[in-house]
Length: 229
Ligand code: SF4
Image (tube, rainbow, N blue to C red; front, side, top):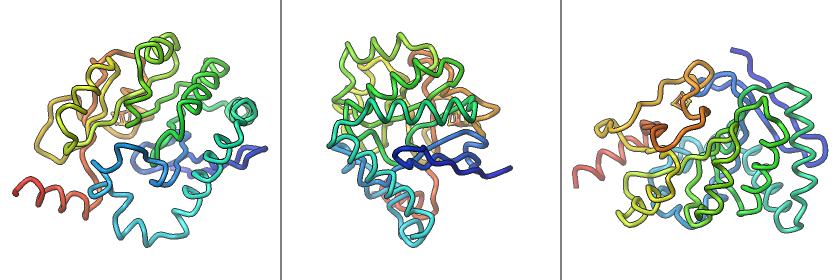
C-alpha cells in the first residue's frame, strides 16, 4: 500500500492516504484535544491517549498542527477560505473517498457546515465524518446532512457513555459508530479496509450502524479491567 501525504495550499492542512486500518482513503486527523464536551467518556480508553501514541511524538505532531489550524480557522471565521482550500486539494487529487477526523473531532458547528459545503462542491467524492458532537446534531442539521448524497455522518458512541447520552445519539437518526471491546457485536462489524468495504461511506439511515472493535493494546486491556469491575 502506498502512503501519500498532501497539504492544502492556503492553510497547510495535512491530508494523508494509506493506513493499515482504512486503506487508501484520503483522511485527516486532529489531535485529541479537539474532542469536545463528551470526551470524558473516552479519554481514559481512547487509544490515541495511550502512552504508546503519546510517545510517537513525530507521528502525532501533524495531528496537533491540524488541530491548531482548524481552531485558528474557527476563531478567525475563515471557513469560506477553508472550503476553497479543501475543494482545490480534493479536486486536484481526484479523491474518491475522504474520511474526516480519523482522530480528533469537529471544532465547531461551523466546521460541520463547511464540510457540508465541501461535499456539495465535490459530488464524486464520498465523505464520512464520525463525531461525538451530539449537541450540534439537531433535527435541522440532520435534515441538511441527509440531503447530501455523498456525505455520511455517524454518531460515535463509546461503551461507557451514560444511557441518556446513548439515547440522545440514537434519537439523531444518524448511523452509529459503536466503539466497544470484543464482546458486544450488535451491529455490522468493521470489515477493513474501507476501500473495499465502503459501509460507512455509503449513505444510509441507522441501518448503516457499525461496530468498531477497540484497538490499541493498552485501551483494550483497560476496557477488560473496566468490564470486570
Ligand atoms: S466498516 Fe468498512 S467503511 Fe466503516 S470503518 Fe470499517 S472498513 Fe471502513
